[in-house]
Length: 546
Image: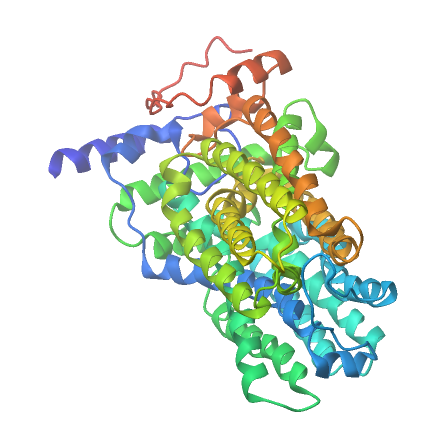
């Protein structure tokens, strides 16, 4: 024990000699390859305070999941359709299933899709807001907007007011979803970055499951003309819980140090890491300070995201968010009740079943994300999703579900397999990767742009789903489109994305800042198990540098 402490102290002292030129902008709290001796001497513990702060931030994911999915069942309810002036949903399934009129499908597309469009409007500004005013204050801005949007939805007097509420609530989620992944990544110890980053996606699937269960509960117990308002109104209560939690969480140490509040940053970091391995925590703080000093000499324009040094990181950050939506998962998250009903199954029951599968599979990703690596998980999941979607389309086009219930159940099982593949890879990594690939000076702006891409394409998916499902293409046409995209994603991931799981700070920089030919070649070889990075010597000889 004495030897370990001595080694840590010695390494910590040597850290003072590290030049700012040798410090690279951080992507995750504690990625200290340059002080490897200190980290090998002792690993920080996960404190209750850090877990509470991460869970509170991830509660925004629960709001996201609930609000996005609560209207999945509501749009088919008689009380809601009567309020909106829609014709009641007609019973029937299979090839000759009755479809909503085009004007109804268009309005349902607006209710479902404009939520995502609202998120897309503000997501690009979330990074700039959080960089300037702090992650913590930005979360509060998002919360206030959420309460306004939720209130307008619950008290809507017509279609326009409801859509306005969806837009505002979506805008709030755009702010929150662009800030929370960065907030969590800057609070988490480096060796738990992936697991804690998965909390946000866990919040999303928990919210989606809660929306399904809450809808079923109210449908079965409340039989009034305003039952749908009770279903939608729960989001106000959920937002209150997050607001209470936010009152007790800190600003991130990195932003505090960047804003000149070094003492507060140090005390906050100490509280997050606990008393164990104090030398490691102090080393982490010293690197944060050095990084902040180094970043001051660098520009922080949004155009820097497309500079030669950062362009590949930007491509990965935005591309992962794009592909997360083009998996087609939101086809099921937003319209699964109708899709299962068209298979001659109980739409509500199977929506809950799918939500349960999504819920448990996502929690498994907490372990898998750092264990097997982001890249392998994404490529494997894409292969499974491609096969499932193509097989489902073939069964749907080739078999009459009204006469063959076995085929209907087979498609339902395939959809659950698809859900497991998404939840174990694309769901969490779609948020983790963009929060870790950008330099500190551009992290907020990069995450904001990536979130905009996610929400804009989420709008496209959710707006077009009711229109396509109620057209001659049917759900099967969507399966083929998204299946082809998943097939194309596999080589794109192989050649254009490096593995980022457990990558030390300096090695992360090296993976992105290289000529395109070398970048593609190295990525193609990246599936081989990466050897642990050796600690670099703390004393650096810069005498020969000009």
